[in-house]
Length: 326
Image 1 (cartoon, rainbow, N blue to C red):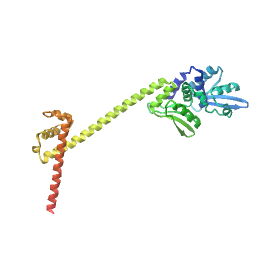
Image 2 (cartoon, one colour):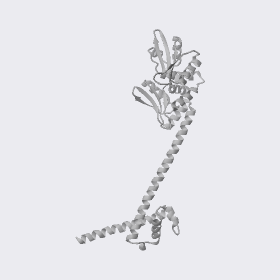
Image 3 (tube, helix red, strand yellow):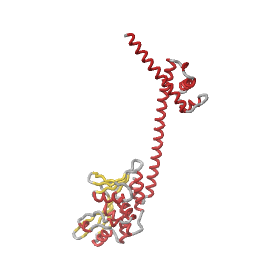
C-alpha cells in the first residue's frame, strides 16, 4: 500500500460532526473532482474516481448532508488490470442546484459546464478550512513515501484553484508553493516538519505518527553519520599531526641528536617515537611528572621549531658551499 493511499484511507474515516464542515469537505471534492454535464435542459453532477474510499466518502457526505440517493456505476478500467472506475451521478436539476449553492459554488459559472473554486464563505471557520483541505487531498493529493523523500502535493489543471488552495493552507503557517508541471499546476510542500503540520491539519494522526517515526530515525542516522564523519576527520588530523611530529623528531635525532635537547623535550621526543598512535593526553600521562594536553602540545611545537631551524641552517650551509665551489 502506498503512503498516499494510507493517508487517504485514514482521511476517509474523519468526518466533521457539523454540517458546515461536511459542506466544506464536499465543496473541495466537487472543486477538484466534480463535473457538471449539460444534457439539454438537464444538469448532471458527476464524480468519477478509481479510489473506492473516495467514492464512499463522497456518497456518505451527500447522503448525510442532503439525504438524497446517488446513482453509482462501477466499471472495469481497461487501461489497468484489477482497477475499477466508480462513477457517482446526480440527475435531478433542483438537487444539483441545491448542492452547488450549499457548497458555495457559483451557479452561473457552473452552468457553463465548469465547477470553479467556491466562495471563501465556505472556509470562514478554521474547522471548515481543515475539512476543505482534507477533501482536496482526497481528490487531488498525493504524498511520497517519507522513507525516500518528503513531498506532499495537490495537482489541478486550474491555476486559480491551485493558488486559492495554497492560500488556505498558508493560513496554518504552512508554506505551500506552486509550480507548473506540463498542463497542470501543483501546490506542494517539501519540508518534513510542514508536512507533519499539514497532516495534523487534515487530522491524519496515524500517518503523522508514521512520518514522525521516519523523521526521528532519519535524524538519528544523520547525527550518527555526522558524528562518525567528525571523528574520522579528527582522527585524520591527529594522524597527520603525529606524522609531522615524528618526522621532525627523527630529523633532530639523525642530524643533531637528542643530547642537545632540554630534558623535558627529550622525554617527549622519545615517547612520541615509541608511541606514534598515542594522543597528546595519553603522552602527558606517560611523562614523569605527568603534564596536561596543552603542555605536551607546547613541547612538540618547540621540537618542530627546532627541526625547522636546523633544516633552514642546513639549506643555508649547502647554498654557501655551492657558492664557494663556483
